[in-house]
Length: 136
Image 1 (cartoon, rainbow, N blue to C red):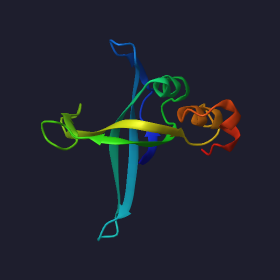
Image 2: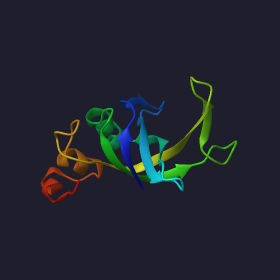
Image 3: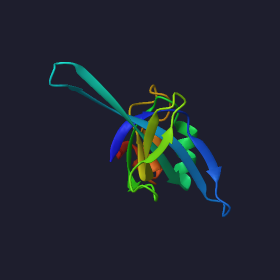
Image 4: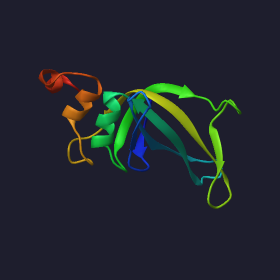
């Protein structure tokens, strides 16, 4: 389970079998004070993949900056057993964690980059009659 902000707009594609797949990056931030009293901050990047009808809904309602809660399975890089590593434009080594999502909940109301309780409910396969009972 992770909660963070989208780093870019989602990208929708379809598998050869016709199944929808949406990918988006999610940033989580950690802030602390070190032993010298200096404020430190670290951002972790997560690459999220979600399939099926949920993928189509995520693509329709999510956009860069949107706060979401993701529940899913972490996947390790087959070569390293850890996060996926790459070199950034500045030459530094970067890493992202890969997650296959089961549930994506949109946080906030319709004023927060689109979507709302109806979209969050749809992410869990609830019918419109059940929307009123859904929590964001």
